[in-house]
Length: 92
Length: 500
Image 1 (cartoon, chains in turn purple, yellow):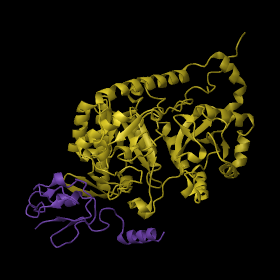
Image 2 (tube, chains in turn purple, brown):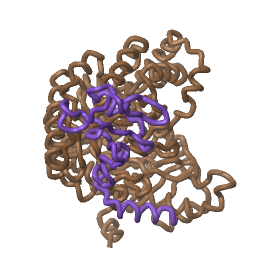
Image 3 (tube, helix red, strand yellow):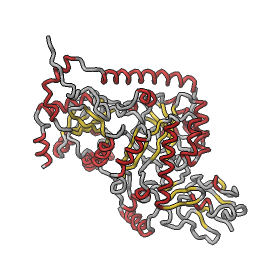
């Protein structure tokens, strides 16, 4: 089992020092998780540390590809509201 | 010849009102000499100093441990100017190199701050490595840091060790119920915590950190974001509490919320405060402490005087091409700082000196000044002088003129309508927007102004005035106020008629 960081990562470094397995690598264009080292913090912490501090919804996936922080869970913005406002901005 | 004695309670046009100094508009008027000496060359803390001294932020701190509803961590735009936004993240080594380059090129640069784009104390290794190197290589630069306060108590010792003289804490609330509407989550003891519980922890840590810093003799400024309907009334209580705990300055800033910024408040339609709402709150808090009114809410990588940004001149590739002799630069910097400090001190002495009796005599007929109402005036100024063409002004300083003197109360951003050929077609609407931004002001002072904006300003009830070009701002504002007074425009009846 391992987590994955994808391209929406903003390279903010918040997760990197927290990883108990030193599985997070500073890389371009975005940070990466070494799947061989990642344990999802099992045995170390109740919550996966990168997931618990990451500010970007959808930037970390579990091994099934599910978003660990789904849309709206961190910002509090309902996804339908977000979509409506983006459409309005594009229409300007 | 006997001169009449003015009653002690008569306001002296050159003296100080309770919160700030009338004639110099120095927000530090109420401070002790010891604190003033520590902040007189800090552009962010001294309204006077910001005309002469520059600051820079180095963006070495990307990580954050909380989420605020006015912040979007994805945003990174060169054309956007607000806190939390940067173009280029720096390593500590790069930040030190950039700081030395800027200090050598801009001798007015006295202050280096770390302000983000995340929280500096959520990046302790990067932040303190930068401070450690700078304390060694550039001992003439003041170091400061701003933080959300969550981990502040853990870092007070280290801050003191690096000789950090000033810390800014952003405190938007002291009530967790208010906090729950501002902070959706914090990262605390290896967990993400949401809602009221998160706000309660954050508030407790901020207050503890504030107390610890004050106990160590480190100057603390408190920043608060004014969010209409969320913490507006509550900020009066915040102001009282932080003052009682020893913060020396309170800076209430307006919320910046636009849908395109992608922040919670922007997307959800939370409005920003109007200038008059901001001023009313600052006035209400001022009875309790020194309020800062010249904040420009700069980026986490801003460089230069407040209100200007010279960051483009100091990108990493440009710095690499520079050859810096810091020893020589330091000598130039010391000379400039001594000259400006002496100039400011002379100004202050002059403003605070008892007025000669003959002047008091001259002022006697102005007893009617006591009833003259307060008037807001916008000024297109540079370096404390009415020196900018109306159409070229990027911002207007707003002064409140009254019998007590000219008091600086804020600034309004303007769009330059006279920016060249390509934009001329759009000139009219830009001028309209600028006039809108000046709402509440009755006069606008500038060095020059064209016929078209003159007419439009007059039509909007704002009197343009170009007769005080190159005069010191406070003198010009008071001259206009006295003219209005003499013309009978300032008695209560006129004001009432205007309001009706």
